[in-house]
Image 1 (cartoon, rainbow, N blue to C red):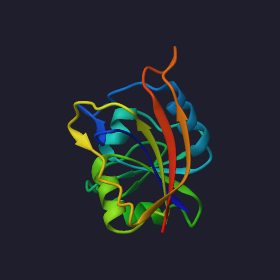
Image 2: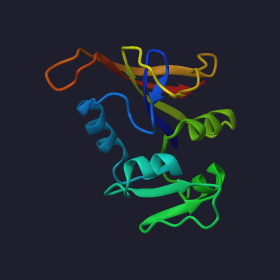
Image 3: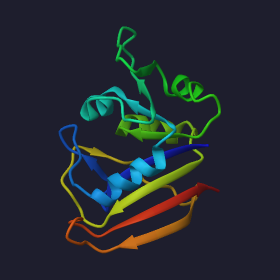
Image 4: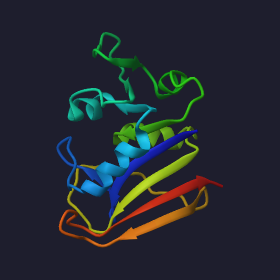
Length: 161
């Protein structure tokens, strides 16, 4: 199963200046729990914003640069090649915007795992619109802002119809 995992705002904002716009510790904790032990597929800019391979995960970096190397990571020149590295095991596409767009347009995803931040943000990268004719919401947990999480948010899973 290939799952696209993303945190997006109500206006589909993903990030600004190659970084996250908000900090939601609950989302980061959930991301770690859900992706641990699996392959995580990401574009080069996303990897460089993280800065290192994440523990207990196999990092696959997608780049057009044939000479790109990062210790402890697998390098793929296309999203299809990155998926091939997973050898049919569960994997998560973790960004960025171009990789999300390609994965959705090329019908490479089985499930969407979205953290919806219930606020609009100024951004320079956005998540594509989720086509509800293609995706069906299968679970949702709603949370209010608290002392650790500055914004209301929801964890929403979608499955391909």
